[in-house]
Length: 291
Image (cartoon, rainbow, N blue to C red; front, side):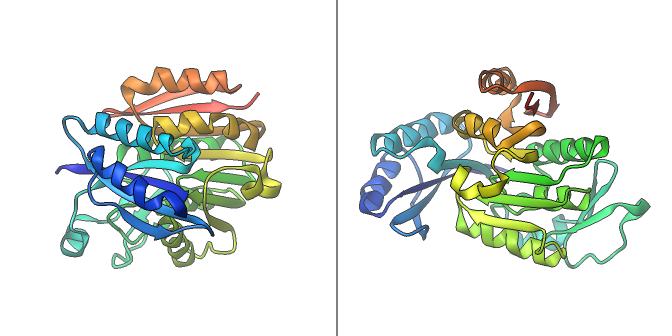
């Protein structure tokens, strides 16, 4: 079924209207505005996947750059074109991930097999259920990393539903900080945390990675996941390096398999060591460690 790329951009209120017009000129669909931090507006728009989608997305990013919008204030993610109201109960059933996770919707109350850790997730249009290959890649890496050694602090960039943070906490991390530019995603992640009894260990914030937002976590993150496409990964690579503790590890995904070499080079240029590359279908992930 065809899907979409969703672009989110946090812009000054003073340019929101003109920036919206430029986005539409670049080939985006109608632009939705959402409340953001004081003095800022979140612009949300979509590009249907298919011929020319990447070029339109690049044109939109260039248009925003022309208004002085920093790359770190722009996020892109895949969403599926699914009528969840009609199809959720039919299509979204409980599924196993890796060796230790069991993700189920609220209406499926069966026990997890084989002592797996259960994550209760209400499916929605825009946010990850684990079934997208890039999300699965991240879940697999998180499970393996935490099976090798514990982590006190887990950082989730572009958290969406919050499934990666929930997985890290269920698998042994002590605390999670989940960040997303979209306040709607942050609200969705808060609901997931509450549904899974994780609200006290999972801090969720609307915004991007920066020292002020990370606070005492800056330079002390043991494990990180960023499932957010190549462009924001490129722009956030220095911040990812600084946020990680020495020896801290992470998984970077949201990229096509043909972009893995590029992302590995970006990570190494930012001072990280590439420790592995994984792929599912046409999607890839790069695993990293801070020396």
